[in-house]
Image (cartoon, helix red, strand yellow):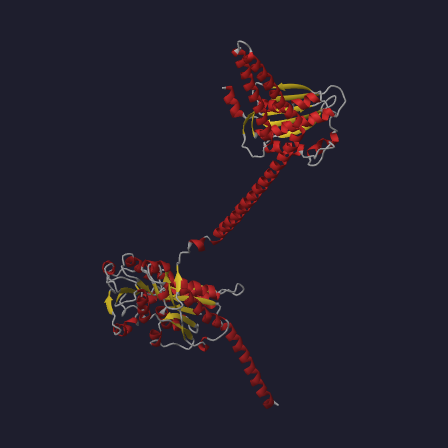
Length: 102
Length: 524
């Protein structure tokens, strides 16, 4: 009798683990968007602004399904190098944590 | 999830992802495929590549400068600028087509300005982009373009939609399509698709787009542009700009023209009708005068017989004075002068009768109404006398009654009214037969001629019908006299009315506009 119960326990455990992993996968679908671009924002002219604007408009076209969007202009044409990236490493997680955790 | 726009952003994300955003899917866009191939992409990183080709810029240059043999490249040095680095590799192939390249990349802007202002004719300027000039001044690509475009003497081929205006156009990147392309992949992931299942694709975000103002400036025909080219900033023509306003004006003009034509046509039709009516009235009036002539034959004969009798008498007397011994020449001359005077009198009678009954249209002249009345009275004297009718006249002298009228027609009206009065009184046996003729000035604006008789009068019920054609109270009349009189007076802007006279009789009243100018002349 004890030997008969053991396989059922294993199957039940496997099913639980599948359901839980499926649920975890569902939760992993992102709901927030962090946009990083090369430009320096408004000071860099309208080209990147228009890309981001079109992206934002297309993603949030459905009023019933709106996503959080956070935009950061890295301004890589002016700033680059290890020091700059170190600054970004401190700055970005702090400011993008909320949007990426959604 | 993360969206990286540009190769720099993607490189940064790939470097920092493990530490900052582990397991967060990444979508990239606006990344050159050659640069992407140098990167090691994890499975959950996908996106769209994009490439601006130097060949496309040269092709656009050949469109705006058909006999192109040189291209001047302005911007960041191709070898060092990340977005355009790959263009460096295309240069040998471009020069192999026979084009000479003037390299103005990496130069200070003031030098660029000096050079682009004096480029040879068969040259086009290619501008991939500029983030800093040769002196290290940071610029945006649009700003850098504006700085030298204002002095450039050749058309400028650009790479981005946002550079149109200073730039002439070319195969250019449309940022909104780049954003929309990325959004497709982003939405797929947001809706549950795994990033690993979305392959990296090549984006088609380049379109041949040209600036209409620059095409005009450089005299470039739209027909030479590549198929599918889009032309921006086209100034609408006056017709396009004010289409509805012009249509409204056109409609108003058409309606106005139609209205004018209709009015002219109607006016001509009315004039023709009036002319016909006038001619018919003239004919009727003439018939009426001829008919009246028959009635007045005795009177006219009498009027002529009188001077004839006088002529005979004065002639006989003259002869007697000549036969006298010695001849009395003075008396004979006096007799002959009387003969001449009576001949003139007879001639006047004949002239007035002829004038009355001839059928020809006359023009309106100033008419002294009293004289006209007197002429008619002369013509009707015999008829009055033979019917025992007493004449009373009261003709106003001051101010003198002048009207503007056709004298023959006006004389006909007065004659008609007088003969009617004579006829009416001849048939009546009531009291004295008195014909009263008056002329008056009414309120300084009208001349009034009144013909009143002491006949049996007119039944008030029949008064209105008197002026209708073919209505008559006479056994021998046609009923046309009074309608003709009324139409003649109305044609002279006057009125003809009838009323009963106490204790019996009828009063016909002619009212005509007074001829003021002639009156003033007369007074002065």
